[in-house]
Length: 115
Image 1 (cartoon, helix red, strand yellow):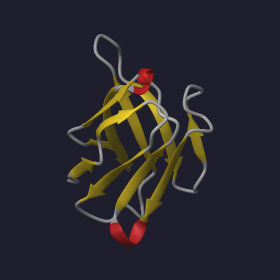
Image 2 (tube, rainbow, N blue to C red; image 1 turned 60 degrees about the horizontal axis):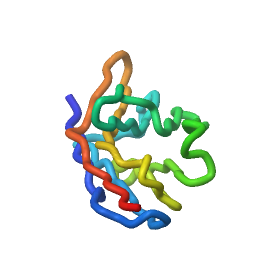
Image 3 (tube, rainbow, N blue to C red; image 1 turned 180 degrees about the vertical axis):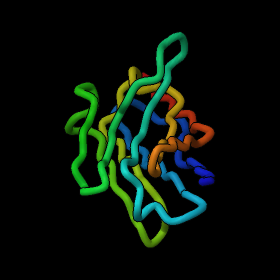
Image 4 (cartoon, one colour; image 1 turned 30 degrees about the vertical axis):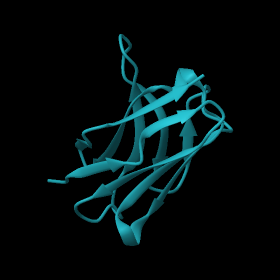
């Protein structure tokens, strides 16, 4: 079992920045993949960014060049740096970690971008 706790969400004006953190209750060194997803009201949950165990990253087209996913194994934490935020980035953001065949999710953190 792994517990994930997200933090760093909030209200920001368009063009601003936020950094989300996802702290895991145990080591993430052996994680197959780590990612951030988001879900806006009335929409399906969508992938925002993912980092594979080897360090390769992939981003949704809508956030490329603006968001950066990173990890700190020593702190068992995954980050999502979000720059140049837009109102359409408003959503609940969820952290996901895959360990073996199991997926673990955080409780989500709200990000609201005002125009």
